[in-house]
Image (cartoon, rainbow, N blue to C red; front, side, top):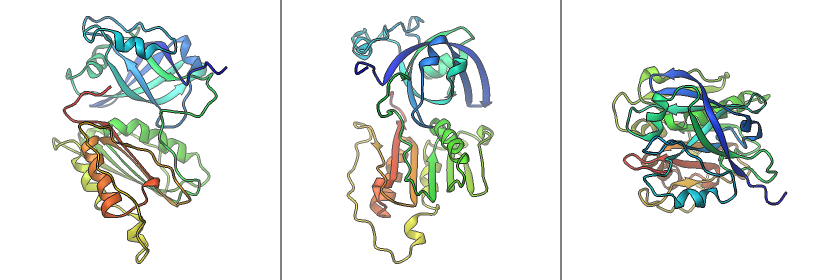
Length: 301
């Protein structure tokens, strides 16, 4: 089965919508093909193809070269592609939940999510259940001896954080966890799984610039070197990232360590946090997952 691809295309239809908060809504997609979908982790990324400018739904063939075919389509006729996180997958029931951030009519994804009705169809590129190789499209990779966890995210990464918390809550002894979650407004808080050693800090922007609260939070949170006074700083290299020309995507490769940080959100904010953790605080970057999910003012597929 060497020709089986890790990702494949799925044809799905909107089954229902569930409003989670003023700016967050859950779209449940259904279809027979979802039975062949899987996830590799709680922050599993997928691609969704929305109708093009003419309102025509994506109709890419499910074959290994689908992306090449997609890129050959004239831009005006091409289906806009955006990245999302699987929130829940119920493969046996042929359903998958995807949580959307609603920001009005400003983009094809938010516009579609606002106006779509049950039965409206889209295509997804998601993990293929027949593929037996290493999972891809997920960055959650904590050390086996995890004791302290730091999560920092904005609303675009909230579905991934929610999935991470769900997974940790099932452990016999979840790690001590601090989560700083930036959201548009106070009313955008949503219920999350909890346990005694989990501290969740909601950070409503209330009109402030994206990333403002995330950047402030990192400077007041617990970090290993503050707890280990006198410990020698970790020798770690720091390389600047051109946040407008490069994708900021630092994958963790944890060695034995009780600490792990997972940070995702607006790229400029994540870059600021990255610089603070690695250059200023001298934390071992192998224990840091730092992802720029989006860049304010730019469109990224």
